[in-house]
Length: 295
Image 1 (cartoon, rainbow, N blue to C red):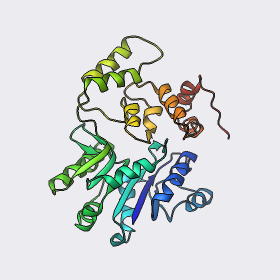
Image 2 (image 1 turned 45 degrees about the vertical axis):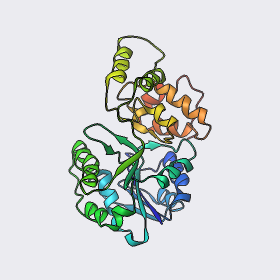
Image 3 (image 1 turned 135 degrees about the vertical axis):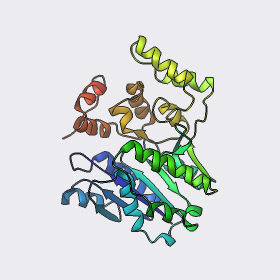
């Protein structure tokens, strides 16, 4: 059996349609789904979520996602499950049929598996979608890890202590990590393809800096500038921060075009979300797109 623990937070205390869509897509692949929110959800949203999951938990907004995952994990009858998946609302998608994602999971030999392995700091499974598989559960590793999760209030330290630290602990205990996306040191062909993916609609000094970063950076964050290469490898998720913040200067309009080309995901879900949480970004991003948003 397989369980999903889904961590949620929204600054406006809503459950956005893109989150409901994700849950709806994941539902067929899980025997049990826990939805753990640090927002103050009204009965309307709780009812919507309950139609898609088994358990809804609202808790105080302390400890970020790792604290939410710990709460959900503690509610499971662990002996019933061969896999426990931890995910959150930091991604749009699935933007393509998720069947290939779960096929890759089933065929993997890794004990801690994720959509993406990031090689910054040290190789680690990114926590936005990570899976504790049977060996970690039956050995007691999973229970020991989650019982000792007490996240500090600083997000960077959470990443270093728990996201990076988890993968380190898994390997030190003799288990294996792995992921659908794992760009160790991309070769020149891949780098040139990534540069082409991110050519903006304008030229200049800033773009040249981005291009040089792509050609020289050894340990890329796979869902930032390598977003399309990740899609080519089967990744069905797009990080919200890529479109909302664009921290590395990717061509985000091309991201939308790629999602539209897949003919699976309605980019109006993205438009409605960004229009609410980052309206200036939404106007800039969609000004040349025929995208509407029903209120």
